Length: 476
Image (cartoon, rainbow, N blue to C red):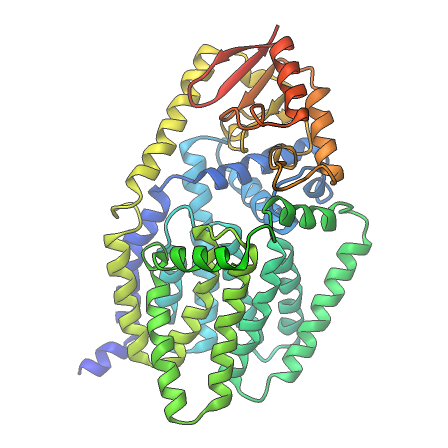
């Protein structure tokens, strides 16, 4: 009787609804993070820099063009139904993200054809804390799940489409190209020896799509922007020893931010014992390679922000599925308990985060009440980290809305050898608009000769009129 109840499709649907309802509500109620606001605001400004698709390349954002395409598409869809920057806009934007997650997870569950796979994968992507979800790494991981789903089918068209999506994953962040390794490992573990044709068609789709993109001439900055992203992240500036320490110390707390990681690591340990005892050395090697390749993606980025660890979502899902049906059930319970305790709208760690974003929203309303014409400007010079454009949307005077090529220059990390540094620098010097918005004086008050020149320009041509939440300057 119990077994029949467990295998019932109706029971699975009911349990999935009961569990996913609070998780989805939490996803909706948590504020979009600063990074998310930066991506969305730049999507809005993108329309002022030309027509699609070349406008995606015309305006710069620290993440490559694949990430810009995702947020531009979501922005355009959301804007069809509600006004940019409103509470309704945020809710609908996140609701669309939830729908995308549920559709991809459902499609994946149909290829695996096991009970509760839909619930397992949906929880894996919806339970991470707000600042981890909808990050570039999170999107790359979700699309990787779709790639694996397509490769598990018996359609050659789907295999080619999977290759096109792998190109897209590469364009999301560059380092995410290494996601192809866990995808191939998972493909072998699920399909064993019938994977060669799939890989060949997939590779053809990937090479063809990348060649078309590069040769089309629509995106002249596509490669230089990807290189700049690595330079701004200061990849290679930290010693191996420091990288290892940061990697471990941040990784130790990841289970509270991304619940599926705890379940994934525990099941991977059990899977290791299982394959070792059964002497399945090939399967064991693929499991180890799958995890090491994703850890490499995290390690090579060198910054170890919490959202970088969302790359482990797909390896955790695969390990859980491979172990047993019981592993799937227990993993669902583990994720839900961690979610209720630590993450999500009802958890203990998001309260301060949501308070900060609410204060930001209130602060922006106070500013627009006191500086009534700031929303009517044709162009604004943004010297903050990027989220000001979300609250005070206007066309950016510079291609580099975030002045990171100029801001990240220091004695220990020289950016002056890049053309983007001088492009940003001269754009700031040549600005003649009415308002400048700075986040924390971190662009102006830097100990370099060029910063002194920029500071002198602002001090002689502008007056400081606001210092709460943002620093705002008005032309004299």
